[in-house]
Image (cartoon, rainbow, N blue to C red; front, side, top):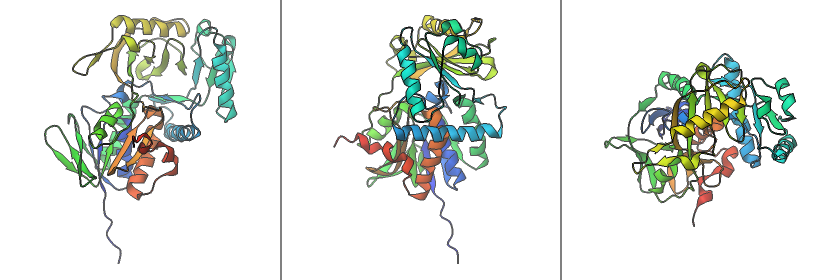
Length: 375
């Protein structure tokens, strides 16, 4: 006689890419899932991410391996339908400020040393590698990474939510500030602002920059280094750019509808945080960023900002991702990472594996929350 299968009930807190991906992977594995989000889906960092799919530059071996696995899952999704406007693989181009060619050269040498596809190019060589770039904007040399890409995370969330709904997941949106409920040292559900309670066998906290604050209530410390950032979306423009650009004064990528997505770090100190927790950025800063981006593009097309969003960019205190079950609060799992876009699919896959199997995945071994323990 076969024993009946016991269904695992999971409450996922967070409607960004990490929460949605984990929820969908759990549903695929046979779990019963309720997804709870403070506001609307993708209203936080997921809705304002440049979402460059990469493992460029220098980082730990374990982090590089995880990011490469993340890119692999996107490649599988891309291969199923290369015509998707919101997921493309046309490479990434990086260059440093004038007089700092050594930064690009060092980056290129490091990438080559561990097999990451990397090409060093002078300005006049760039057009043979990728299109739509004003060579005059490139100082000294650039690094082109052919295997990189980008994704529009709000579109990906919409795509995943179609499967979430088809598999019978329950969405609780506009729930306000919610908290993890615990008894006898174990997580057992989520409580929302209006007093609703969602009991569960397991709980996942994937609230972006707010994740450390959510678990802090239970005496758990996760270092939070999340800075304030902004993403600007332009009006539709006439451009030929395909690669993701990372340059001294602007980062840019194509975006669905013929628009561009722009961000950078130079204006972070110009962003204002208000007493109510909201943020604002001067319109002249937004305009300056779009002008900087225009200088990067062939023909220097006039770019007009259509919208912009401001908030905290989720970054753990040591820059490395945080994934896994909390030892001090069994039954509660966390997902907190700067690279939410690149890791979005793989993180949901591996975290759901741990939740459903009870076995720790070796690829997440160095990313456990306990590394921040103050004891």
